[in-house]
Image 1 (cartoon, rainbow over the protein chains, first blue to last red):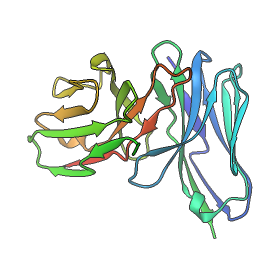
Image 2 (cartoon, rainbow over the protein chains, first blue to last red; image 1 turned 90 degrees about the horizontal axis):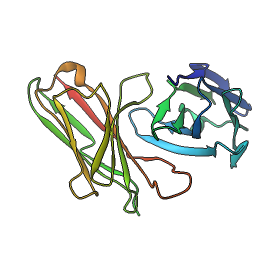
Image 3 (tube, rainbow over the protein chains, first blue to last red; image 1 turned 120 degrees about the vertical axis):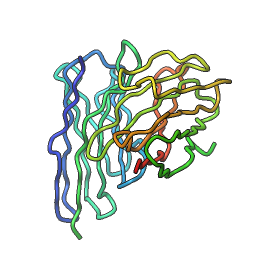
Length: 112
Length: 115
């Protein structure tokens, strides 16, 4: 059974710092991995999608990496801003049944 | 293309009442998913459709829950005889299976409060 874990559960850093969020998964038979952002009481916004054959994806100040064999992904946020404050969730799409399996998220607070 | 749309955004209901939520996916997307999310947790899978066919249902989906996608376009999720434990955010997502690497796009969710 696939399990997705995100560490840390919460993170608070000063504005301007670079930071890394971690996501690990137990079953490497994934189709892709997505990072999402969720603001309080809101839905999910897709940030980056990494195919299982890829190593990383970049969008603006965000860079996501994937090491499928070790079951790890990281989301790197450069030059953090208060507007980056949100919960960040990772989800893996399973090869077998096209289901998304989710981590519990990392709540990020960027202090001005 | 306005993205995935969910209605209503918020619903407050008394315990025992029935509620129905609607999801309009991105127009060319043939897969539609329903998830439930409680505070501080990641989404939990409920069910998904490939066109109009409901292909999988989670064990979380008790017999009080029913979902339909009658014409392979919009979908409805109905909860009968609501309980306080049904209070959660209900999220809908869509993707296109025909693409090589299906990316899921989510709506803003429907927040249900059962009082």
